[in-house]
Image (cartoon, rainbow, N blue to C red; front, side, top):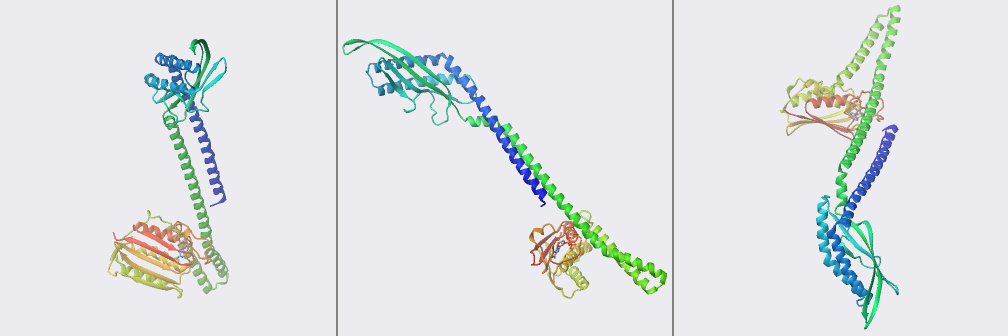
Length: 463
Ligand code: ADP
């Protein structure tokens, strides 16, 4: 991959990360805003109840009247601090069910659509008489005390506010036979808290549309980015392959053109001196090179055909006859004696329907490559497996690095830096073979390793 593409990928990934961070920040902000708005509505609902609902007020009054009686007893030491708190607990326990019933009725009327819990917890009780101030209860140092409402200690509470009840008492009481004046000041502070069941789920549901839209946009951007980069890489590959092809074809044209121009020069001279024999050999050379050029052009034109453009003329052939003739002809065409061909054809009597010409081209391209790319021993095995014909062509040539295996069937693809120098080719042979096999509804497979030879397997179904 080129440096430019790698940089582009890195920049896109960084851009995506930045985009997701901004998106995350915006979503978090929206969540906070929604939560605040939600809580303030809930708070309003509760404040409304607390301030104006008479049934709750009467419960509150009953509670304070009973409690103050107990504080009176404490102030004249008739009961201890612990007993006072125990009694406060008893009063609260007896009044709280009524409070909850009323609260539930009122909150249901508001049709909030969610379960809003509320309670008042005791913060401080201080009693001050002429002598001193006595702390009866302090939330920081004592176990929490719920005055009214639901108990929801395990969930995070949302603080609403605090309320203070301050009262002065003065009465006469007979203590140890003497009538005495007792006076004190009571300070009671409680805090109001609320709790909403499944607050996060409710908020998530409210934000569902936004979240889904964000997710969709995110996936869409990743998709578009992936597609663009993939396209870019493919385009780059195609451009590289095209450049290679132009280099190859120019290289191939060079020799015949040089020979042709030399031959023409010779012919020009010959005209003047009239030497018959040289003229004939020169014309032969021109013709030969012309044929070579023609062949090259034909090769490009024919071997570039895609499987959609190949029209088969199938005939039923005997596997044994067809392949043995094909391989014999190939052997005869080999100039090198150094190539050893081993052929095994099993199931001699099997017949198959194929296009004789095209199939021969497909197989010959592979056989020619086996020789071209260093093979000195070629094993050919033609066999019939289940309902298909299999042709294995194995060579002991230079082999191919694994990373190229899926590309060598691409049009114009050639492996650069081969150990064998100057092997001519246009990168069309394997492409054309694969197209011919494809149009026969077959498959072509390749196993190869650098330095260890290659094996091509062609499978053609009988039907
Ligand atoms: P070419 O005209 O280059 O031979 P092909 O399409 O026939 O084009 O092959 C594509 C590439 O695959 C070749 O350039 C070569 O690098 C590699 N190749 C094909 N057959 C063999 C083989 N039998 N052994 C090693 N490499 C091969």
